[in-house]
Image 1 (cartoon, rainbow over the protein chains, first blue to last red):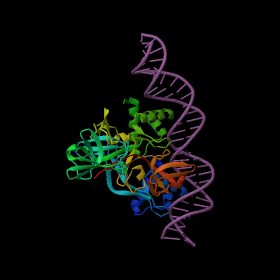
Image 2: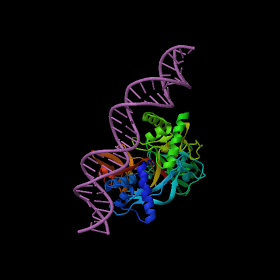
Image 3: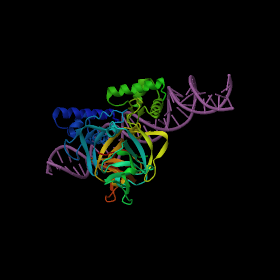
Image 4: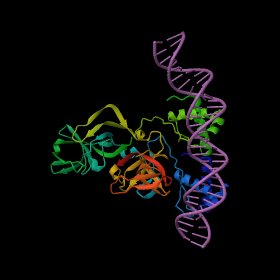
Length: 201
Length: 201
DNA sequence: TGCAATTCGCTTTTTATTCGCTACAATCTC
DNA sequence: GAGATTGTAGCGAATAAAAAGCGAATTGCA
């Protein structure tokens, strides 16, 4: 993350002040610590640093600045830092430990391939045209899992899997579509869906 | 991609300066560090290196250069073969070339982090609770992009971004929710959503 | 009410970007 | 092989934008 010389000085001051005193400085104390005469300048610095995600602060609260630990953010791997949870109307809820996520978390050791989805048969499942489904190659599935199935040896579809006696019900996740019933012998499972990947243009 | 001797010197200088100081050098400092007398030359070097994907930089931002770690071109165990397209009721349509997909295809060179989504404010966008959004850290967004925004410095939300004069409209993708209108000054963009990753239990 | 935080308008300093120009080496084309 | 083209490397000057700063007025917790 980009940071200017002055911003680093501000961060350093905040860290060492908080370290030494056990509470964060007031704007007045920051100003005198940095040789500034206007609180507006201090405020601008704090705001900028907050926007860069380097610290947190509560609105209009005294001494509420919290310096966030540096995210080492190493690149080169497909592993992404998982910074927190986000919910409408609420602040990002920071996650305790340094978690991360990657495709490996989905793939594990399994044999996995991807398929690009066309059509809307899984729309209610929030899988839409253009998404990639990550499929583990397997012959079996459990009740309710989303699978890639081959019906009568020719038609491949993406459906939820339900066993009903000697028959199999393949349930689309789109209320406008009807389920498919077929004898177990005619349905060949190609794999089960482990995850979904979507890329915006 | 090829790199020249001079370009390597530039990269080396950038790395060691940033390592030593905790912030990246200004163009002036780069010039004196490399014995150049024109900032235009520095600018050209930086631009070339950025085009080669060896560093990142924000437009017109002070000291915003980020040297990217070398992509060691590992075969990528996280890369999945893309076998074809699947459509409801049709056979899997094989894809011509041996394509593949991986998180790198979404991430590129950008600085990306993940957030776990809570709540249903983007349900109509097919982003639901439990999904991970992949977010590029950026300060700006274009009309209609999905962004992570900080409103009044404290509330983070996931919304579509629209500019309306001096105001900004943040549009949830859920017909039951109302858009948020706020002055541009009160909205701080944390990043834009590049993709979505979902993992089934 | 009092104090700290926030906002407003404005100035200065620092930094990045763009333009026009020269020069050299490697490559492509005829 | 000569000529054209492209990419790297460099200069200085003009412009534009962001970062950093100020003082005063306002807002908002406690």
